[in-house]
Every structure is written in C-alpha cells, then in structure tokens.
Image 1 (cartoon, rainbow, N blue to C red):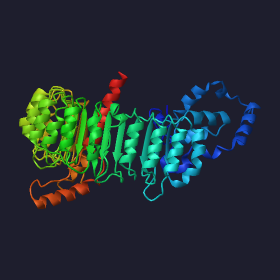
Image 2: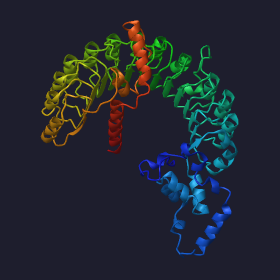
Image 3: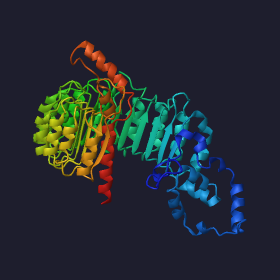
Image 4: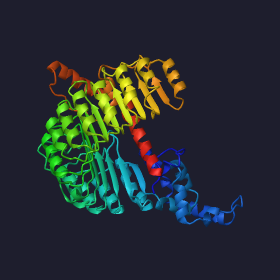
Length: 535
C-alpha cells in the first residue's frame, strides 16, 4: 500500500502508486515542515475536542487507523499533504502508512534525512534522483538510509554520482531483503554490483544503465547469491557489458533478458546463455553486436515467448529461421530490419510454419509481401495484433491478403506504407473480429474511405492522420516507431558511405519521441492483461 506520486486530481486507480514527487524536492515532502510543530497540532486537537468554532464532531475519530490509512491511499500527493496537517493523529497515520517515497537527492537534503525517515519509517520502495547540474547525496546518506529502511524491497538510483562502491556495499549489507534494484548514470562499478549480488540473495530484478564505473578491464560480475532468485536483467548503454557474463549464465531462473545499446560482441554470451538458461521467456536485443550465431544460440531456450530484434544489422533470415524452428511457443515477435533487407519473406515463412501460437507481430523496415503474410494468416490462427511501418512492399495487395486470411485479427496498425483506399476497403469484408485500425502517414488513404468503412462496420474504431506532415528522412519514421526496441551498432552492410549515413541517422533517431506502434501495442497488451486479470 503506497502513496501516489501524482497531481491532486489523480484517479483512485492510480493514486496508490506514487510517492513524494522528486521534481519538487523538499517542498514536496508532505508536511515535512510540520514535523517539529506538534504544539500547533496539539492546539488543534484540543479545539476539536472542545467542539471548535463550528462545534462539529470529528467522525474520523471513530475510524481505526487502518481505515484512515486506506482512505489516504486514494488521495493525490497535494491532498494527502494537506490532510497530514489536520491533526496530530492524521499526521501520524500518514507517516506510518507511506510505503513509497521519491526524493530529490541533492546534497543539501542530507541534514533532513533523519527526520524524514523517522516519520516515514515504513518505506519499502524508495527512489533517489538527482539532476546533472546538482551535487548528489553521497555514501553517508546511503548508509543512513539503509539503517533506517532495513526492510527496503525496491530501490532506484538516478544520477547519484557521489555514491561510490563502498556506499553501495554497505547499503547492500544493511538491506538484505532488497528484491529490485535499478540504477543509472551513477559512478560506482563492478564491486558495488557484486556486493549487491552477494548480500541481497532475494534479488529478483536488476536494471543497470550508464554506469561510469564500468570500463574495459573491469572485474567480472556475478553470479553471487542472488543468481538463484534473479528473474529479470536489463543492461543498457554499457561500455563493457560482457563482464556480466557470469551473472547471465549463472542466473538459472532468469526469464527476462534485455540488452540495449551495449558495446562489444555478444554472440559468445548468448550462446552460453542458450545452453544454460532453458527457462528464458522474453528476450530484447537492441542495437547490439549480434549475428545469426547469437540468435541461433539463444534459440536453444525453447520456451521463448517474446522476442524483440531491433536494428541489429548482422541478423538475417538465417537467424530468424533458427528461432522459428526451436522456439515454437513464440507469441510476440517485434523486428526492426532497419531497411537493410536482411530479414524478409524467407524468415517470416518459417515463422508462419513453426510458430503457430503467434499473437502479436510488429514489422518495421522489413520487406514483407503477401507471399509470407498469406502463410502467417493461414497458419497463425491466434494472431490478434499486427503492425507495419516504413515498408515499401506493404501495398493494397498485402492488406487484401490480411483481410482475407487473418480471421482472428483484432488490431491493425499501419504507418508510412504505400497503401490506398483500395486496400482499406478490403478490410470492410474481411477480418471479422477487427475492432481497431490506426493509419499514419499513408497519403493514399482518404477520409471518405474511413467514413465509408465506419458505415459498413459501425463498431470499428478507425484513427487516421494521413495528412500529417513531419520532417522525416527515409529512416526517421522507423526510428520514431522503434524507440523501445533494440538499436544496434551499425556494421558494414553495404558500403562505407551507407554505413556512415546509417550511423548518423541512428544518432538522430535517439532524439525521436515515443513511437506509434510501440506505445499502441503496449497499451493494447496492458489493456488486455488487465481485462484478463479482472475476469
């Protein structure tokens, strides 16, 4: 039961998931300025007992503390802060029932930490964030927090550059119940991570991003005592991510692995993981140096259900065929081919033949035609979500093929493909379960056809912005759509001039906002999961 990190107008559904807003610093700490002012609260209590000016009765006094705390969980941060100043009891209940805090971790917060954690002594989820231009809290603060919050279960560090290996090691010793650690843009390195793995033996999720202490020649990480419990590992933007090899291989219960923009050759690591971690279910490979050998190695994890291969130019149809042949339980497949034509019909035909449980397919910059789409529609009878972006081969014929073959399709997303009204019209008669279509930057689709389709299928939701004009180069649209997918280090695919051009575009693509397809499918998937959970 935590407290919201949202505006006062937060809805009850989301208000229990926040904390003290990090963007407001100390000013956002609910009634922190009232911690030492109990005289005022006592006077208010006396007034209420005497009837006060209004002579009203305090009905909240009949509520047990647990009920009052439950009511507080439905309030936004601002409302809860004001409630904590009403009386001494409300002040106490608010502090005792807060389990989630997010603090602006600037150095000048250090003197206030004892009073903060004396009041909020039940915190189990803590986030410390510091911006680039400020001096962050250091080891002293981290040690103090670890002594006050020994039952901490989730901990997030962002931009705390003054924290060293020694501080993290002491923190890990004092907080052995830690289950989730996420750190980014910090200065500590391998020794700190090894200390966490040794002492926090119940750790289940580990996310590491841009650690300045990680460099060539650093010591190996893991496996440690936490290897027995780790289920999810995410490594992002690391210079020497291969030093995590012993941990990745030793984490036998690992189910989710994400490697995003990490330098170095990952083929050898993925081969070893494939032979030692049979329980792997979800794999994200984004802009890393992986070839078909790496994909073939990871395909030995036969239970993989979700695979993202994005902007990995050394992967081709051969690697995708290995995945299809071995991972027959595949349900979600996202491929960003970066328009280099190394993945196409050949690999997707094998997916259609082998992966009959496929439910979601996202193809970005992939040259796919009706030849493979017809097989996918005929064989993958459970396919419900389909998306195309930046593919010159997706035309009216392919859309007509989808309309005729994909009987279970519920949601279709098309962006920057050469389709017209003819293709959209074919959807009026096909895909009987279709409930939603999104079309972006497809100039051949007119508003009249959308209205006609709505008339024929009144329950169908159709979103169209075919006339939106944006300054995109020939790969910018793909970058925008694949922001959450793996970007890879470009290799010499065609020529040196093309390589330089692709690297330049890749850098520009990092500046793009969240994409249509990624966000759309995340919402769709989350919505269906919540619906299934409630049923």
